[in-house]
Length: 98
Image (cartoon, rainbow, N blue to C red; front, side):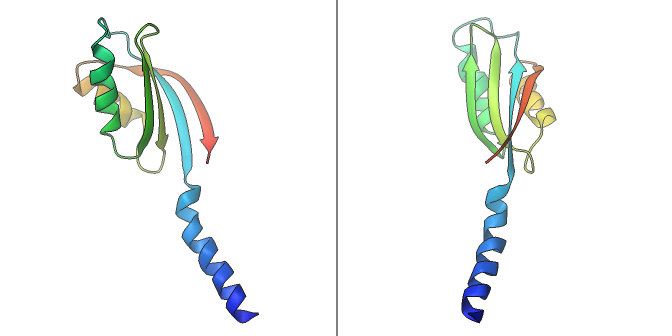
């Protein structure tokens, strides 16, 4: 009985980092003017620590990014695109637990 309780407690403790909050935001990136621009924007966003996925849509001039909000922030994402030559702003946000 005691062994199973200790196992349950240890499992819970080691599972906590897996419960980190994932956040999804859409950034407006109006400076994307050619079909090659999304490649640069996506690469810049993927280099930000904590980013788990990036989808860039050239036609809509936006990027949807899912990230661990304990490791990075919207400000870091917009700074990454700005540093790559494509200033961005927050367009939409969606909280999501995984």
